Image 1 (cartoon, rainbow, N blue to C red):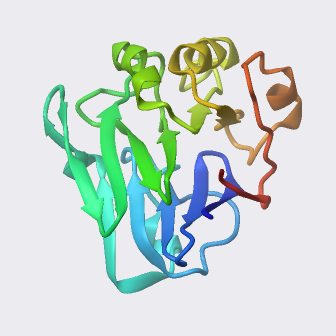
Image 2: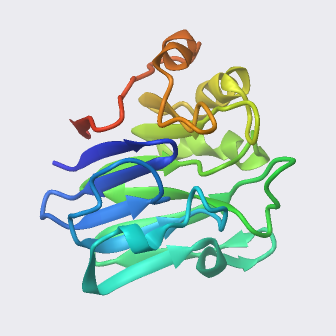
Length: 198
């Protein structure tokens, strides 16, 4: 069964049942000691791309926005020995869609949407067809959509569980913002907390 360790801000670590490790947007918090098999970087802002923090296996694959965008409006897929990653559009007034992506990660039968930094996109209307298990959504309202729009996205996407991250610039997390978030099937995870993904 895969696990998710929330490190804080927009950073988290996924661990597959066989022990393989995926870091998403490394920057904040602790827990970078498990050697990475894969590192996913949604864009090149400094609070998302600190890959040097991660211990790495010799064959670690780093997949950044630059690898993920084939042509404007077209996105690459990656098959990493049973872990599958599909890049998807991410954009808002602070994030150019030619330089940013989100990722759909398939790991041990669990489908997870890592939004990166975005606001609502037209592609989200297609996400219900994917039957996602988790949507991890940004919602600081400064550099990204705010909690209200993030809740709208959660309803649109239709994942079984919704997790709000990247909630307060300069802080790992803000529990009150997460508690007040009006999203269906929300799950609150504190920095340093690890959960099993089902």
